[in-house]
Structure formats: structure tokens, C-alpha cells
Image (cartoon, rainbow over all chains, first blue to last red; front, side, top):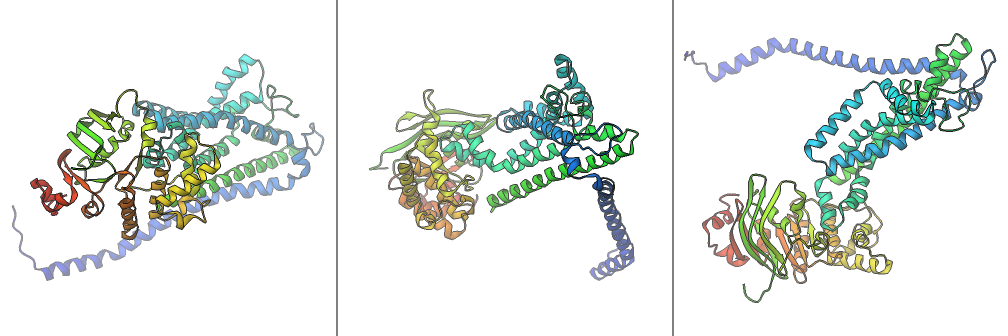
Length: 305
Length: 254
């Protein structure tokens, strides 16, 4: 071992102070640079979003009026008309999607957090993660081969189911996370009272975590609301009111797509208006989601206190 | 132990969590209508032991047990035992208060409705009786519809005791019921335990030796899964018979 010359405490203090002074300016520069880069990233996020919104508003706002919201599309060449059928269509499709995605997704989440053995839960969780990554058009193809081909018709039902199946993994994952956040002692308290396990789940665990579950449902709903690909060969689109769930149905994203690639200026304006209505719908759904987030965090905070 | 009859008897009980031998060959008898405390350092098995009495360990996947546990001489691990009925007979209060996300009234009425009680008048009266029994009635009688989550920690814990009382239990298990409470709330719970033991058999797990000395008639000292000493609390605190008990009581480990 090499023996260094002994330095005194005073020398150590002096050396530390000298080094500190020497590197101070550099440290400050780096610090400032980091803050600058990070704030630029944050600004870019806002800039992108505002740009899209501003564009939509300037291009679409003038075309959104009562006629647009309440009338059917007019044939090519005739001025006016609206997308009322597409708005109703999107709401119908979302309704079917909720009926498919929520019970299955939530059921799977309850099973995973309350009943499943570790290994099986891991397999299911991995599967849902993979499902989350599947391109949405694949869900469309799936619904096409499973429903459209056997039923020999494009239909609202097949489109809604395609969206619903897309929702399943999102609902399952978020719901499971929130159900797991409920303390074990709450479950035990219920069971210790002699409450059967399924009643504990329904009466105690779900009411505690319902805010988080609703948040998951809302954000997955907001995501599928704007999906076009899964609807291309399922819901298919329709220029008229949809008479039955077994018939093709209009949807906002489909209508926007069809109008946007058309050669007519009037249709382009309508496409912008449709996009604006769609994003407003998604915005409203997200508002509900954040309401439920706030409600859930109040419940968890109340329990922690 | 004279002039007491036994309520719970444990014979040669062994509990394993996977490879971990959590309770080793425990034999003891818990007297009726007395307060019995389990003390010992963390991980000694006192919580495991209390959870044997209402079969809470059934919920743990890799838990395994051997031996006999009987309440009123009836083996509670026998095949024909209805676990739900057992848990009505043996109430439990946990370390962290566990009010359900319901009103104060509904927290207590819930258990009654679960067993099928529908008569409003009966439910009302049991709720009041239980809240009085848990020394909470005067504080909440004007706000029974309020959320139980809005109560203070000590009140929540007494609500949980009231909830257990409503089911008409004979035994009340308390797993460190005061460890999350301030000294004032703690002393209220201790006073309550003192009253409850006239009517109920109380088993309390605590790592607070003074608490055991204050509320318990009998004390069991557990260490590393073994029952080291069990007997009259006063006697054990003044003349412990085992060196390890003495060491723990005098604060040399734990």
C-alpha cells in the first residue's frame, strides 16, 4: 500500500473549498442547460396539441352548425348536409364496445387480482400487454373473419365488437391495478365478518376502486372512439341512418376519412367539422376520466388518513 | 388458572408458511370472558396464532397447519365446520382500521344484512347497542348517515369493534388494535377492552408490553414461533419463570 503524505484537516477543508469554487460555474451551466432542454420538451408537447386544436378550430368551426349536427349527408354537388348519422353511429358503436369490453375486461381484472394463481395471472397479464400492442387494423380483420364473413354483411355489431375487443386489455389492466391498491386488510375485514368472498368483492372492494376503474374505462373509450382502421371492413360506413345493428353503420372517423380523400372542397370542410366534433367527444370523455381520477385519489387519501 | 373455564384450546399446533415453520408445537388454553394478550418481538408468530382462531390463515395460499384448535371443545378445523358461522362467533379487529366505504350506520348494518336480517327496527336497535358497546354512540348518534371514512382513526377503530359486536360474537380477536393510534385514542380502546372482557373472551396481540400489563388477565409470550411462557399477567410481569421472558420484559431484546 502506498503511503501518502499526511494532510491536515485544515488542508482538506481548503482543498474542498478550492475545488468547489473551480467547478461551480460549470455546474451551474449544466444545471441551466438541463432545465432548458426539459422545458423545451414540455413546450413541444403543448405546441403540438395546440397546433392540432387551432387547425381543427379554424378549419372546422365555421362548418359546425345545427344542420351539420342534425342532418344526413347530401349527395355530391348539393351544398349543406351534415353528419348526424355518423355522430349517432359513433355513439352506437361505443355503446356496443362498452357492453363487450367492460364486463369482460373488468371480470378478468377481478379474477386476476382476487382468484388467480401467480403463474396464471402472469400469463394473462402478459397476454393483455401483447393485445395492447396489436395494431388496431388487426382487430378489424379479426372481427371481419369472425363476424362479417359468417353473417355475410358488414354491420354495426361487428364494428362495435371490434372496438370492444380492443378495450378489453386496457380495461383489464387499469382495473386490476386499482383493485390491487385496495389494502388486504379491507378484504380480511369483510371475510372476518363472515361475508362471502364474492360479496366482499361486490360490496367492499369494487366501491373503493370504482373511481379508478371508471377512469380506465373512460380513457380506453376515448382511445377507441377515434379508431378508423377496425371499422373499415366491419361497420363499413353508411350514408343514411342505421336501421338495424346487423346493417352497416356510419361512424365519425370513417366519414372524416371518406370525406377527406374526396376531391370536393365542400366535403373537405365537412371532414374538418367531423374531426372537430370527434375530438370534442374525446375531450368530453377525458373530462369524465379526470373527474373519476380526482374522486379516486380523494378516496385513497381519505383511507390513508 | 383457577375458577375459569377454557374457551379456546390449542393442542400441539404447528403452522408453516411454505418452508417457514411459523408456530412450533403450541399448546395453550384461553380462558372464557377474560382478556388474554400475546406478546413477543416482531415475527414471533403472535399474529399467526391469533389468525388461527377465525381461520384467517385459510386465505394464505401456502399456509399449512397441524394440530388441534377447538372452541368450546369443538374442533374448528373439522371438515363439517362452517367457516362463515365460525367467523360470526369469532369477531376480529385489525391493526389498521378498516371502515367500509359506507355510512357509519351501514358499516354495522352491513354484516347483519349479509346474514339475512331485514327487519328495520331490529337492525336499528342492534346498531345502537353495538355503538354503545364500543363507546362510540354519543359521538356519532347525530351523524349516522355520514361516511365512516370521515371519522378519526380512533373512532374508526371503535367502529370496527362495534361492527364486530353487532354480529353477536363470543370471542373478539384484536391484532395490534392500537398500533396506529395516538395515546389518547389508545387509552379509550384499552378502557373499552376492560369493559368488553366482562362479556366476551378477548384475545389481543400487542407489541406494547405496558398495554398487555394494563388490559390482559393472562399473557402468553412467544419467541421465534415457540410459546415460551403463558400465565397470569401480574405473575408473569413480576416473576417471569423463563430467562427469555425476563429478558424481553426488561427490554433486553425485541
